[in-house]
Length: 116
Image 1 (cartoon, rainbow, N blue to C red):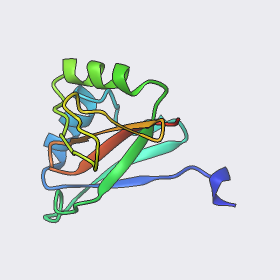
Image 2: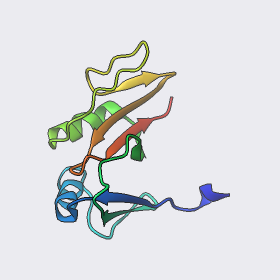
Image 3: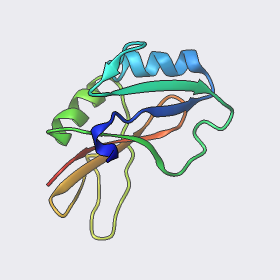
């Protein structure tokens, strides 16, 4: 099945140079680099940042640690309150799993998740 194959994300960007600076400077990516079996691609489009859904998720071992590191690099996290759950620290906990959302320089919603 498909889980044996890498997943590629195509991230829309109004300004590819600005987006590249964000992904390299804030998230630590490098151009043309494979990341854990996937490759991040930026493509120019005026539609960047218009989706209300997350464009990509990263599964991490420790959401709180990643949030702290990304905040230290200038990433601002979204505050998405869920029924019965507030996210003042940027992290939502549900059923033992944890998630935090942020936007890139183009307004695309991105997330980091930690399994229960």
